[in-house]
Image (cartoon, rainbow, N blue to C red):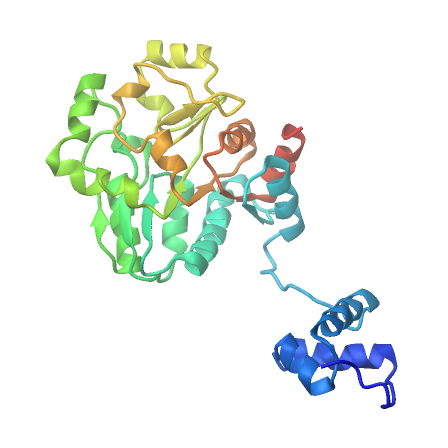
Length: 319
């Protein structure tokens, strides 16, 4: 319906306010407003733009007080990932960082998980904090992404972490009852075909969300790093190893490193992880800055959950 030239005209700012109220407050559709006010739908859209530009409409996004949204947006743009969730850690002690980012990751997870999702999780301090911080989730299945490391390396084993998270979802747990590294690549390949592990390994192709930690090789702060022999560590370091995600090792540019040592691993491959729609890396700490930067460059990570100190250190490394 066109404008009616014979009627009196309200000031543009008032007309924009009327349109904005009906659209934003009363939740009316643009075509409904156009019909009610006797103006075109295109004019409704123009008035809504004018209402925002003139300050009649001010849109505010209330984030949790501990989340630094602008820093997260800047970090995501710098590395070309989907999103970065940055928790403020201005006065936090270094040993409090895993708990802070675990809490933030739990908040994010609780907002995205649905009953049809299949979750994958590796292991690590920050992921343990995430699972501990989760209250309840929709009944999603939970799959262990990599085999286990020596008990002394972790506070909570990968199998236990999968079971804890599955208790929170009420869905099925698919633990991977195998070591992370076995003696030979042939043994690893045989285990991947073992029917007793098919429940977990078969779940890799069904994953919709993967939760991973990031290990550092320079300096060494990685459970995977400690599983190799001295000779293998030297070989991988010489090849440029900087970071690991699950049992995937990458160099400073995010390129995957291949070796016979890594072929001994039992867990999700880079190709399988790359096909997961949402890969959430939960990691922080100044000593892991180079590793996190490398992991982000790999293209395997879509969402990073970290702390503000680490985020500030990652920005210069992006250029």
